[in-house]
Amino acid sequence: EAGVAQSPRYKIIEKRQSVAFWCNPISGHATLYWYQQILGQGPKLLIQFQNNGVVDDSQLPKDRFSAERLKGVDSTLKIQPAKLEDSAVYLCASSLDINEKLFFGSGTQLSVL
Amino acid sequence: DQQVKQNSPSLSVQEGRISILNCDYTNSMFDYFLWYKKYPAEGPTFLISISSIKDKNEDGRFTVFLNKSAKHLSLHIVPSQPGDSAVYFCAAKGGSNYKLTFGKGTLLTVNP
Image (cartoon, rainbow over all chains, first blue to last red; front, side, top):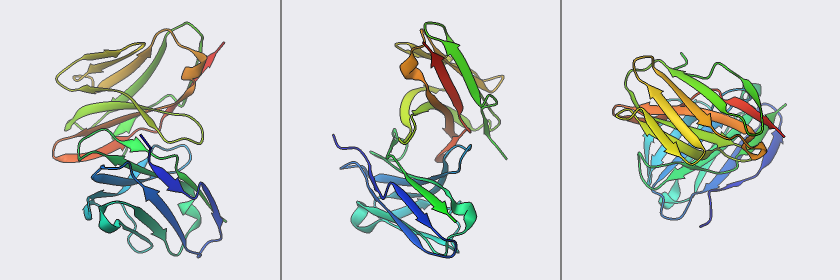
């Protein structure tokens, strides 16, 4: 079974630039999550999708972050404009349904200079 | 406000001995707890979980203990192996909110 795919693996940008991350969840998984993991911290949920719809985006900085999940499959997370404090690993995860076990991708490591 | 706390950033044990990783939580609504393991440059992978209706769950070398009155759980690894060296995250969820809240993680190093 293929796992959660994310790209790119690494990204270096300057502050105020924009960046986008892509995630392809495990086939058939209805729920998709984006987490932000800052060095030395645990993963923090940014947004959760159930199929096409947003379940929870309470911790998403909506003035600069946006995410979409077209057709209930792939998802993209965008940051525009990036700030220094956005430097982190961005993890995508998926689960069969809400309240089921999460499977994580390898993440995208973002460095904002 | 950190609702899940892992107060030990790191732990070092000898191969073959027991590793004990601790986790405390503050939210009394949490009723389901999980441990995730993370190797460098990889995403976290699920290790073991426990529901609040139980006080122990075992899976091979891994056992999780839950003390609800103390709002404390621990992960025991016996015997520890060098391949267990990784960051271990404690996570919790509960009530009507399915969102997982993670601790900061504990880096376990198992020395040969």
